[in-house]
Length: 320
Image 1 (cartoon, rainbow, N blue to C red):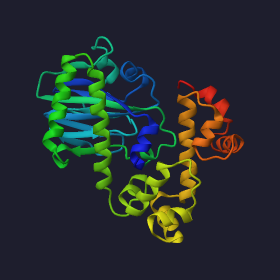
Image 2 (image 1 turned 90 degrees about the vertical axis):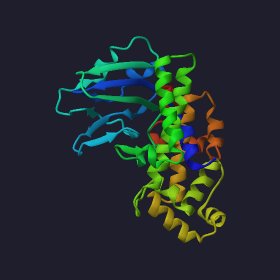
Image 3 (image 1 turned 45 degrees about the vertical axis):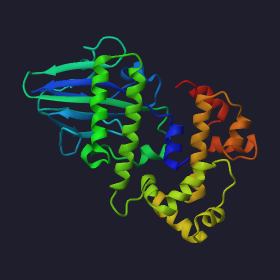
């Protein structure tokens, strides 16, 4: 399994398109997803990534202390940190909260909403993705506050555009299985957004996603994520990717921001925490799966990282 797929697997990414919206000028909406708004489709999730795809018309979007953006039909914007953002035809209009908008919806399934003053229309497909945990997730940590993508810049753009048109019809039809279909579309969108963002990173960028673009670092990440329980050392990794030990250590640290073994230790703790939170697996098995020789060694490492013993942490975080 490649490193990106493994990170998303452990994060337990889920998605659900929830709104096929037609807004008419003048209108302005203040948006940030909250657990109570997302729970009907996603259930429990600790972190949300909302997005908006413009089907028709124009959309103005603003984040605090940032210049407003003007999006046109065929553009998508995602908010990986779930920051409060303003969106509308005129951002000077009094903003309506997303909670007020969703009060117009009945039930817990996909929704169709019309809102605004009756002027020029903007049609959107809005959605969100959920993660069971964002703590320690290297993908979320590496992403900016907003990612803007033009569908025309994506390979097979006609297919991608048709997928969103299909999503809009699916939201309106509310057929059996719609939540599952739309959730998978949301997940596909997020992975494609990550790919596009990674390809467009400026030279010299230093973070986890930049590591995917560096062939040597990407291969090392793939090895570590492919067998997290193995007793790795830098010498072994260097031999696998065909560079010297010192060259690998320096390159990995410059791109990722920490040495390979420190990264592995952090990732093992993230995997362990997710396993404790979502399964009833005994500590000895989790220790083995994350590369520790004994339950005692695992417990010491976990307490050093999280400040509490794994059994206590599990009891406090189960179901959260």
